[in-house]
Image (tube, rainbow, N blue to C red; front, top):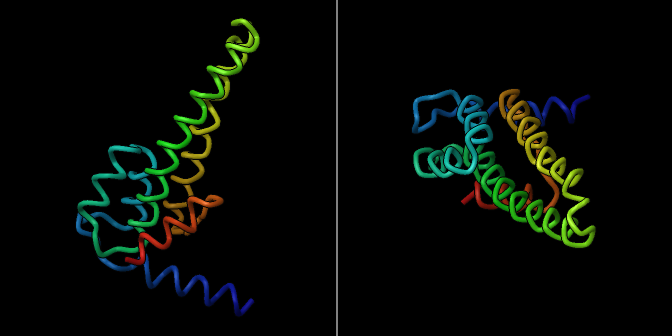
Length: 129
Protein backbone atom coordinates (compact mmCIF):
# COMPACT_ATOMS: atom_id res chain seq x y z
CA UNK A 1 0.00 0.00 0.00
CA UNK A 2 2.84 2.38 0.84
CA UNK A 3 4.50 1.68 -2.48
CA UNK A 4 1.37 2.62 -4.46
CA UNK A 5 1.12 5.88 -2.51
CA UNK A 6 4.73 6.69 -3.42
CA UNK A 7 3.98 6.02 -7.09
CA UNK A 8 0.87 8.23 -6.94
CA UNK A 9 2.87 11.03 -5.31
CA UNK A 10 5.60 10.75 -7.96
CA UNK A 11 3.05 10.90 -10.78
CA UNK A 12 1.29 13.82 -9.09
CA UNK A 13 4.55 15.75 -8.82
CA UNK A 14 5.18 15.25 -12.53
CA UNK A 15 1.64 16.00 -13.69
CA UNK A 16 1.12 19.09 -11.54
CA UNK A 17 3.75 21.08 -13.40
CA UNK A 18 2.54 23.67 -15.87
CA UNK A 19 2.72 23.06 -19.59
CA UNK A 20 3.91 25.31 -22.37
CA UNK A 21 0.56 24.96 -24.11
CA UNK A 22 -1.39 26.29 -21.13
CA UNK A 23 -3.36 23.04 -20.89
CA UNK A 24 -3.43 20.68 -17.95
CA UNK A 25 -0.84 17.92 -18.45
CA UNK A 26 -3.46 15.17 -18.61
CA UNK A 27 -5.37 17.04 -21.34
CA UNK A 28 -2.16 17.62 -23.31
CA UNK A 29 -1.28 13.90 -23.02
CA UNK A 30 -4.79 12.98 -24.13
CA UNK A 31 -4.58 15.24 -27.17
CA UNK A 32 -1.14 13.88 -28.07
CA UNK A 33 -2.66 10.39 -28.27
CA UNK A 34 -5.85 11.40 -30.06
CA UNK A 35 -4.19 13.54 -32.74
CA UNK A 36 -1.04 11.44 -33.20
CA UNK A 37 1.34 11.80 -34.96
CA UNK A 38 0.81 15.53 -35.68
CA UNK A 39 -0.49 16.32 -32.18
CA UNK A 40 2.46 14.48 -30.65
CA UNK A 41 4.95 16.53 -32.62
CA UNK A 42 3.19 19.76 -31.64
CA UNK A 43 3.32 18.90 -27.94
CA UNK A 44 6.97 17.85 -28.19
CA UNK A 45 7.76 21.30 -29.58
CA UNK A 46 5.52 23.28 -27.21
CA UNK A 47 5.89 21.37 -23.91
CA UNK A 48 9.63 20.96 -23.51
CA UNK A 49 9.64 21.02 -19.69
CA UNK A 50 6.79 18.72 -18.69
CA UNK A 51 7.99 15.13 -18.42
CA UNK A 52 4.46 13.68 -18.36
CA UNK A 53 3.42 15.40 -21.60
CA UNK A 54 6.72 14.58 -23.30
CA UNK A 55 6.42 10.92 -22.29
CA UNK A 56 2.93 10.54 -23.77
CA UNK A 57 3.84 12.59 -26.84
CA UNK A 58 6.89 10.43 -27.60
CA UNK A 59 5.05 7.20 -26.95
CA UNK A 60 2.05 8.14 -29.11
CA UNK A 61 4.31 9.41 -31.91
CA UNK A 62 6.39 6.23 -32.06
CA UNK A 63 3.30 4.01 -31.66
CA UNK A 64 1.36 5.72 -34.41
CA UNK A 65 4.20 5.53 -36.92
CA UNK A 66 5.39 2.02 -36.03
CA UNK A 67 1.90 0.52 -35.90
CA UNK A 68 0.95 2.04 -39.25
CA UNK A 69 4.05 0.56 -40.89
CA UNK A 70 3.66 -2.87 -39.25
CA UNK A 71 -0.06 -3.17 -39.98
CA UNK A 72 0.43 -2.05 -43.59
CA UNK A 73 3.16 -4.64 -44.16
CA UNK A 74 1.09 -7.38 -42.52
CA UNK A 75 -1.94 -6.44 -44.61
CA UNK A 76 0.15 -6.58 -47.79
CA UNK A 77 1.69 -9.95 -46.89
CA UNK A 78 -1.64 -11.51 -45.89
CA UNK A 79 -3.26 -10.23 -49.08
CA UNK A 80 -0.36 -11.48 -51.21
CA UNK A 81 -0.16 -14.93 -49.60
CA UNK A 82 -3.91 -15.54 -49.81
CA UNK A 83 -4.17 -14.18 -53.37
CA UNK A 84 -6.41 -11.34 -52.21
CA UNK A 85 -8.91 -13.37 -50.22
CA UNK A 86 -7.24 -12.53 -46.92
CA UNK A 87 -7.80 -8.83 -47.57
CA UNK A 88 -11.43 -9.31 -46.56
CA UNK A 89 -10.35 -10.13 -43.00
CA UNK A 90 -6.94 -8.45 -42.85
CA UNK A 91 -8.46 -4.95 -42.82
CA UNK A 92 -9.44 -5.70 -39.21
CA UNK A 93 -5.74 -5.29 -38.35
CA UNK A 94 -6.17 -1.53 -38.68
CA UNK A 95 -8.38 -1.46 -35.57
CA UNK A 96 -5.61 -2.70 -33.24
CA UNK A 97 -3.61 0.57 -33.32
CA UNK A 98 -6.81 2.56 -32.79
CA UNK A 99 -7.69 0.53 -29.69
CA UNK A 100 -4.18 1.05 -28.26
CA UNK A 101 -4.42 4.80 -28.97
CA UNK A 102 -7.74 4.97 -27.13
CA UNK A 103 -6.23 3.14 -24.15
CA UNK A 104 -3.23 5.49 -24.20
CA UNK A 105 -5.52 8.53 -24.32
CA UNK A 106 -7.57 7.27 -21.36
CA UNK A 107 -4.44 6.48 -19.36
CA UNK A 108 -3.01 9.94 -20.08
CA UNK A 109 -6.28 11.58 -19.07
CA UNK A 110 -6.18 9.61 -15.80
CA UNK A 111 -2.61 10.85 -15.13
CA UNK A 112 -1.10 7.38 -15.57
CA UNK A 113 2.38 6.77 -17.00
CA UNK A 114 1.27 3.70 -18.96
CA UNK A 115 4.18 2.15 -20.84
CA UNK A 116 3.97 0.08 -23.97
CA UNK A 117 6.60 -2.66 -24.30
CA UNK A 118 9.91 -1.36 -25.76
CA UNK A 119 8.42 1.99 -26.79
CA UNK A 120 7.53 2.95 -23.21
CA UNK A 121 11.05 2.63 -21.83
CA UNK A 122 12.52 4.60 -24.73
CA UNK A 123 9.83 7.28 -24.38
CA UNK A 124 10.56 7.61 -20.68
CA UNK A 125 14.27 8.11 -21.41
CA UNK A 126 13.49 10.78 -24.02
CA UNK A 127 11.07 12.56 -21.67
CA UNK A 128 13.77 12.76 -19.00
CA UNK A 129 16.15 14.65 -21.29
